[in-house]
Image 1: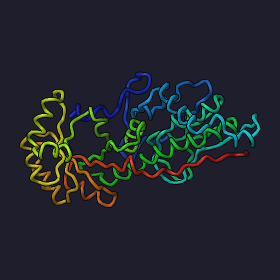
Image 2: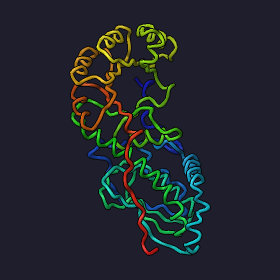
Image 3: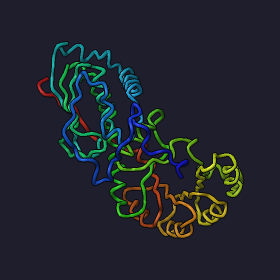
Image 4: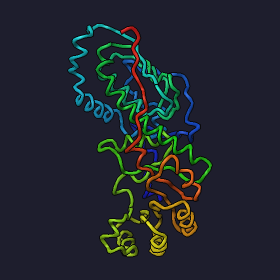
Length: 335
């Protein structure tokens, strides 16, 4: 199983050891003393919550990712701000939650503001994985007005999207509480953003499925079509090619396929678009023989019934491909 599921908490930035993990929702770590990032602090990415959750980028990679986003927005040539705001103007501002949710992406937002104003001072009121309520301050900033305005959209893009992923994940996690089911993500991620989106899933209390095509074997319907539906052949070939210990999972649409996959020695069965009754039957057949995962069309309205069928995991593509952004805004004081 470990070969199929890569470590859920990768080595933190700069190789520092991971010393803890986020607690399940309700709740995540409670906010402690706000942390202030000053111009002399070069380790903003090493927030304790980000380390515990396994933030996937080190300081250099974070800076490069954010710089590319700022360049895409031409933030260093912001003619609207240059034309309207005098260069020496200092202001205070705050990133504020407009709705309740789970925060993720703080280090990226901090980096965006710092790249546009290296002298900015930022007080972090809520770290990744923390619940916030509408009206709560996430970041409080003091610095040059030009830098804040030019960095605003990029910083909020990171925070709103990743917090949206974390918030949606937490809603699913909350709904299956008390069952044995674990909420997992998929590979339905934005190109170039997979590590960040899967990190946000962890911030919301979810678990990562395989990271990429090399991380594990998942024999899907089109793979089976390529071998004329011969599940035994597909599993045998996968077992012969994969490294020893790699989990072999087979997607099954019917109970007959479940039986065939079990007979072939599959380690895990992906139960695709089955009814709760079919899921319960499949779980009974697989108990003690293979891990079970429900997938396909899982919604907030249906996830509890699916979990109560007894599956081990529930995979949800919507966590990353359809999560609505968490509404966050940057409010200025005195501009």
